[in-house]
Amino acid sequence: MAINIKNERTVEVVKRLATYYGASYTAAIELAAQAALRTPSPTSQEQALNEVRQIAADYRAYLPAGHDLADGDLYDEAGLYR
Image (cartoon, rainbow, N blue to C red; front, side):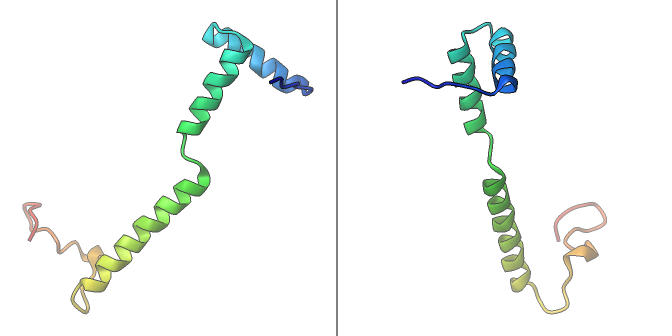
């Protein structure tokens, strides 16, 4: 299977990447692609943030009326959980 890269900037970046890795162009592209796939996408990061927000909202729903987490009353003066 062949890939023909016609963008000069991309070709230059691949050359620099291959030099950095001390690898062929193909190996450098493969390493970069694998690294990119291990990095969370903005969509998955936003999804994770939304899940955390939902967990926090669910937790707040179980607190007694008038209880505010920002008051800092979860911990005593010694920093221990009440």
